Amino acid sequence: MTKVVTIPAQEYQRLLERDTDLEYLENNGVDNWSGYGEGESRGGEDDALIRAKVDRLATEQLTTQERQMLTLHRAFLALICEECPGATLNGFSIVPLWNGWRININGIRPDGGTMRIVVAPDVPTDADYATVVAKLIADLQTAEGGK
Image 1 (cartoon, one colour):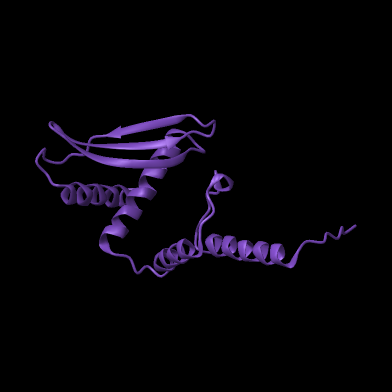
Image 2 (cartoon, one colour; image 1 turned 60 degrees about the vertical axis):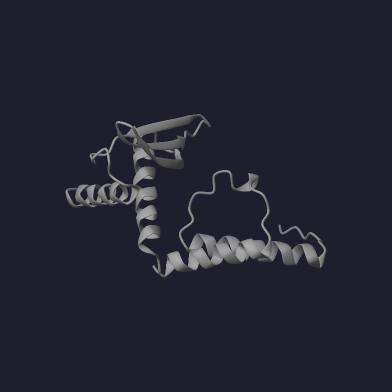
């Protein structure tokens, strides 16, 4: 049995636009909706910026730095999920210390708890940020080739 509900035309239009936005994101690879409903609503200008970035991602028109960060995000997410299946990546930092570089990979467990994986890349202590990122990417590509 189908139930009919009456809503104002303005509300119907808003729901229709929202559905279109969600379909657009899903068709462009968004597959982690954890916490989506808790987010703040965006304005039209924010939506345009997000769509432009998704379009660039979808068509692979990325800068070298964007491609590197995307590679690191994917690898770090895989590392977090390997450690705790179902966890999500909450971010990472690449930090220079007096005795070398450190990568802090932060995640959120399915139960809401936080987790951190710390990695010390094999780079010289005086290496610059770009060198550290390039080394991480090279190590990831080598590891993927060895699988």
